[in-house]
Structures are given as structure tokens and as C-alpha cells.
Length: 226
Figure 1 (tube, rainbow, N blue to C red):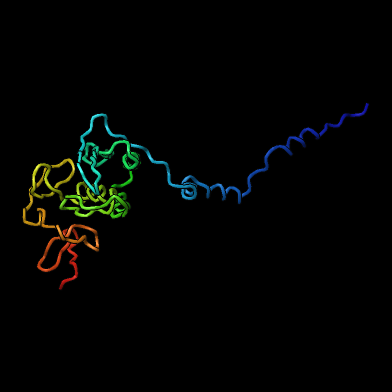
Figure 2 (cartoon, one colour; figure 1 turned 60 degrees about the horizontal axis):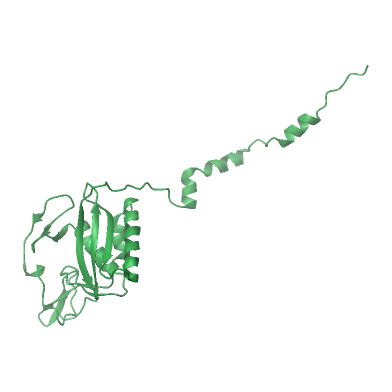
């Protein structure tokens, strides 16, 4: 009887189907595709959303600009930092009311995902489009748009450290969640005669009469007199 020789066909087929061992170059390339490197290529890492508590403190601010009237409500975290905003325009059902409501939702989600308020203020303040006009707020004066007014006011209230007291005319240092420290009061804190005063060419803020010319309350720019 002839001895049967073992066939190697099955083993050869299995070996051909099995993946080839990774080379050194392949391993180095996979190491370069670490999660950190992938996030740099594809986008920033996912951020966690920190929602506000069910019962939270809030500030509601009334504003009027270019014939439009509205209310800005800012919800606060326990440490006093803004975590959401709601913008309600008086003309309910209008296009601008719907846009501002959706914009408030976008800003709220941004704040809850850790976007600094200063970044939003730097990006959106001094944007120019209609409606614009005088605001009646002596610390802001002329606003170039609703976005300009809202984020200049939020910067003044939450970032600058100085703002009018809640129920008075005196100015003092204030930080969210802390008591107001009264500051000195002078004539510059009150409204001036601005019937013929032009807006500041540098920042668009309120200008006040100063001799034969005008001086900006916000940045100190003059209207050109020496």
C-alpha cells in the first residue's frame, strides 16, 4: 500500500486568507493616528454640556433700540456666571422676534458647552446692521445693532466688573454672586444733553458736549477739536 501523503491545500488556503502581519511602518502609522492626532485633523474634541439647575437665579434687562423693544433674561449658574439667555421682542410673531429667540438658544447652548462669554462678546459686539440707534443707556449710547447692544451690555454687566447698581444711579464694582461695592458718583454717570451729539467714530458710543466739541464717554475719543 502506498503511504498517503498529507495534503497542504487546506492549510495553504487558510494561510492565504489570514491577514498578513503588520509591518513596522504600518504600526508606526497607526501610532500616529492616536485619538489626539485624529481630533486635530477631524475637529475639536466633544465637549460636555453643563445644564443649569432646575431653579436658578436670573437677571432680566429691558432695552429699546431703533423702534424695537425687548427683554433680555440671563440665567445664572450658582457661581454667578451666565449659563443661558432668553431674548423676547415686543413684536411677537415677527421675523426679528423669531430670529432673536433662536439666537438666544444658540448662545445658551454655547455657554453650557464651555464657550467663554468674552469670546462671544468679542465676536458679536460692534456688529453693524439694522435696527440700530440710540438706546437710552448712558453706558452704551448708540448701538449699531441688537447684537451690538446685547453683548456690550453683557460685557459691561458680567466682564468689566463695573455696572450701575440694580435699583439706583450710583456706580460701583460688582461681580456676579457678590455684594455691590459703592463707588464714587460724579456727573459723568448721568445723561447728558445729546440732542445734537454725534456718535463716536471710534466705537459708536455716546458722546457728550465738551466745550465747542464732543467727547466719547466710552473711549474718550473727541470729535476733532484740539
